[in-house]
Length: 632
Ligand SMILES: Cc1cc2nc3c(=O)[nH]c(=O)nc-3n(C[C@H](O)[C@H](O)[C@H](O)COP(=O)(O)O)c2cc1C
Image (cartoon, rainbow, N blue to C red):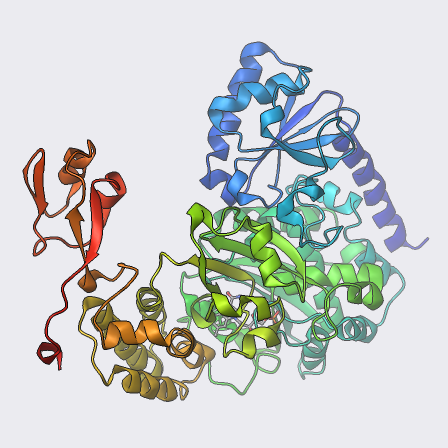
């Protein structure tokens, strides 16, 4: 074996021994999910309660961490691993239920049966495999990108190496695989960019490899600004070495010796995990100078995002890395010729890089086993909104979206689906009637004037008003405009004004025409932020035309969501929650006494706080429509 092979084998032996001991611990181990979703749902309180109880009882169990299995609605998730290697996931394990988990782990079999979700490794009598859970009905039998999630400690390099990590990269170095052969492999596999444009990654890597100059950079876009998307976060927090291996392979294949990982500041745990993974990989000789003694140098560095949506645009991101205002540049030149510090650079999304190690390990044909001829492989999707089960799934391209909605448990609270919002504020909003025609490929969305985006999908129930949603969206794209193009910042201001008027009850006959004019004007903007910002509005005028007309011409909102078209009234004077609802009113709009209360409509600001507190006592009703002549 060569020096490279020897060094990697030594690391692998050590890693495998360590991972085997973790998988088959001497004493049962309770791993509390430690990811943003778990933390947001009380995971840290669960850990503290477990620690306290274990100490109090002197229980013979260990406490550890993993990443949640993707079932966000069941957080905080906890996994028990027994010495025989069996692992079971439980949830939601709130702080007040930790005794059941400690009982179960210490031998009272069945104590936590009511919280058991499924077996993730080995066998446990009476508990089904987690793969049988209906939430995973659309996932392939075996996960690819998520294969380590829940089964490793994301903070351990050894766990990543023991499960096959860095092996293909070390082999490429060891066998002096031509960089060109790596790029060809990726192009053959047809990995497409997961940032939303789905351009062939191998072809893109050829652009940088062929660019003049010796200072080439690899850049990772982990800005993930789309509301409703947290797919990149799962990789950053759950398997950070997957990203690093993809990037260091990229450095090798494209002749880049330096790279940046641009992570949004709102992902502090992702930043922490990736920074720690970089330090571990450097210490193990897998990153940095003279990798595994091969002479190859690739250094990676985390850059904290500046909190602007346009910094997710690849050229806005490049400017931001240089400490310049996050303003998208004028193209051409493209990043492959003039990127970070105006040197040739390649920008890929986090998940795009994360796919690379798998293709290096298993080849293009294996990659083609899942997906469609048009879009190969799998991708991560996060599903949220008005559904029973929110979470992350790894789906082959081409998965039918009605099946996904079923896997998500359908629409919550007995509602019905009204719309699917995909791809964030620049993505699309398509009506429920089209759902049977949609699957997880670009073209099914494009056929209806929409786009699939970069993994975030929000199911919207019939409780919501699409005109109200457009106002929120419009306000977002206006605020996030970088300000370079008048067409974009001015156009989005005008679009927002019109939607504000529509929800305020001041719709005008010529609003549709004006919105269409704004749409064609914004197309003249420099970057895609501007060009794509009217898409949701365009979808609305086309697919929710009658709802639009109802607001603009009829001055009504049948969902009773729009501020100027709806008012709050007392529906049930006997509701005991009314005094509390009256007390919370920020503008003191409640008058009268118990049994004879009323709301002053002139004062009410429609915040809805009273309705939240007293849903039986307070209801919404349409405001009477004023004579049309007043509004013309
Ligand atoms: C306003 C705007 C925001 C964007 N945000 C992101 C983002 O958060 N993450 C991302 O990967 N791509 C984002 N993109 C797309 C990137 O410009 C670029 O296409 C992508 O990073 C390329 O990587 P890929 O080829 O791996 O998809 C955004 C584009 C625009 C116009």
